[in-house]
Image (cartoon, rainbow, N blue to C red):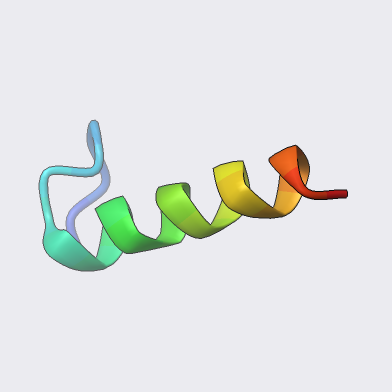
Length: 25
């Protein structure tokens, strides 16, 4: 796993999920 600015697709999906979860809390 690459630790950075979420360059990997998995990281992007993870960030997106976090954003959505926080948005629709």
